[in-house]
Length: 155
Ligand SMILES: [Cu+2]
Image 1 (cartoon, rainbow, N blue to C red):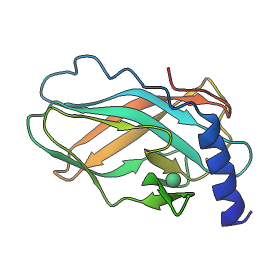
Image 2 (spheres, protein in one colour):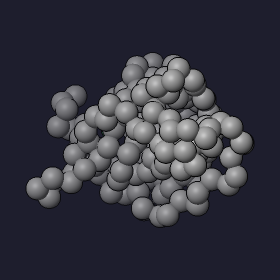
Image 3 (cartoon, rainbow, N blue to C red):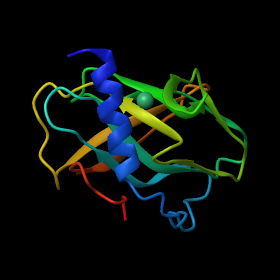
Image 4 (cartoon, helix red, strand yellow):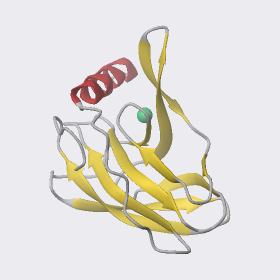
């Protein structure tokens, strides 16, 4: 499988996704970082998947998200979709800083967590856990709902 084909499939998938405004997470637990509206869009075969969610920072201080751990996938990376010269590309992001009191949205067409194919294929409507690691050493994890290609949104 070539990188070109992978990008093409991923772009097609993202275009198929309606950029519906997600409702933002409700009140988060005081004093922490909470991941909500968490879902993963998978593609058939060896294509990468993308994870989306809302990260609510109610810790009272800025939080720098530096890594995501996804045990059932070969790798997880912070990415962002950008359009350059009319072409949609996905580029790596070193970290995402979420100011205190803010909600940061990973959504189709924007920031996402790129997941290299799972060790064993995932079935739609199952769940898998991702752990978010922050610059201060703290971690928070959430259960992500697996959705098949053609899914319109995570809601
Ligand atoms: Cu990506």
